[in-house]
Image (tube, rainbow, N blue to C red; front, side, top):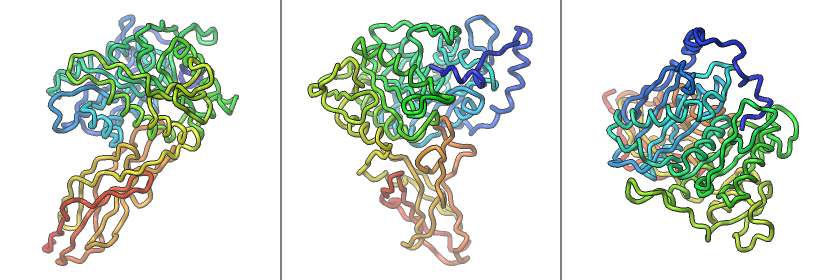
Length: 461
């Protein structure tokens, strides 16, 4: 749900007539016309706004990434931004996130990121409530992107949804509308309504179908959104999450709560729990054969915890009411959850994969690398002749959480322009041959093996 205090930035358009709508939207095109190229393995479609009742009133871009070498997709991971012009614009880079790509690739899934062209101050409900046209536009894009990419199965595979703020409202709404299609849903700082809210009468409540109770869902508010900080701009987020959690869990739904102890509405370090959680859900839920129904989540391995507590135990050992307890799918997730709700410093004992490619032309290096599923990529180490030469980047950035190679925006997507995997050695001597290697370092400091093949600089540069 969008908190009531967001009205100032996401309130209704007060004066919009049908004949003025295209002009208003046209004026909003400029902030959304700068984005990374959509060359294979990336593909993009854009739909204009509609003036027809019940259809999407904002233009929207959808960008999808298809893992190389995948013959048949098994699903699609959707990374949905939040409300407001800045968050909507940030969706333009969602499909380029190396860490989220690692999750998608592991399960032979596509990674898709929408970017709704919402003017600042316009009513976010016109897209974040999927019944207002964004559901239909999303399913339409899957058909079009399937045709563009040569993966027509994209139109029918299951969905794993991640959403922030209004994107959480959207993702939760999609669970309630299409539970049979959704493998799992992570709701960061936003949930749909299950009952009418007199403070937000313009937001329509959703029904809770029995099939939705079988979909694993995680509510993920920041502690400063009404848990420990009871006032301020986002104080109503936790009460909305609590109502949604109680409504779903009270009927036996597979829903958990993971309170971020460091943040308000920004995404912080949530990806270090969200990605492993989705990894577990996708491993269990995705069917072996395309077209089969999603597999049911087992309940015999579940752990339970107080929604705002710090300790999880096997379900059989929980001494409270299980229908008021946060549901966690297994021990590995529960142990990660306990660390996350304490300080978000989830442990990782496995090094990242080594860079997969290195090329040297003169004194210019470029390489390719895949992110560590658990901890992403913080930076790269460049070695010359077996010795340390440089870190790339020299100083990692991310004002919302752990410094990472691609940096992050408010809605958990890479900044623009995208950071390239390249380095120029300005200290080498012309005519002198050097041997280079690259090492990946993840966000907990673990190092990969060096690139398998060392690259030799051109001595004739």
